[in-house]
Length: 245
Ligand code: F6R
Image (tube, rainbow, N blue to C red; front, side, top):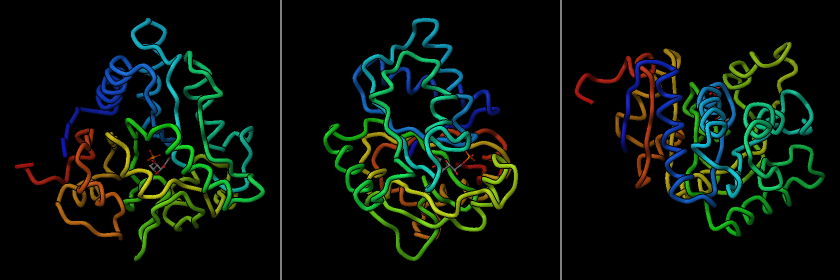
């Protein structure tokens, strides 16, 4: 595991965007696993700038996102499809037909999940999976639990996640209680993993992650057995790390 500490959010955004730019430049038709939330917004802005400056070309890239709320259609402003279009896809030269986000309105969710996993296999696997991390250690919407799922699945969201995500909605009651999410298998099979975290609220979970013990109660700790993980944090998120790390 490679741990990079940058000064602030701006620093992690620039550094993470560089990693993604380098991958695309070395493999123009790569498969990018993408995430939503506050953590990647800055790095998406950087990628938009790099694309405008002609330093990175998305025309052959395929993207596949981690998750989506159940019950929200892609044109709902709080859906993750909408977020991705609005924050990144509408501003870069990616072919939207090659951007995948689970369909939270699918009639048959079981089928949707199965197809999503098959799509990842058909695409030849994810070259780089970008991740944020929940304050409770979730990655995608794999919430702390005794058992974790391997494949894409429908899941309930914990109170702490509903609370954390309510900042994007008018009221907490509007936050969907369920989501469709890639499982740990889909994430762990990615060739490279890039996790970004910023702010004091992530300090405790980052310290847990770096501690070196695996528990399904902090799903991100499973990343410790992946062979190519880079974690980029700012000084606030690194503030509870032992000094020698
Ligand atoms: C988003 C996702 C979530 C977030 C996590 C952190 O697609 O899968 O796991 O990465 O909840 O969210 P932020 O970045 O908003 O703190």
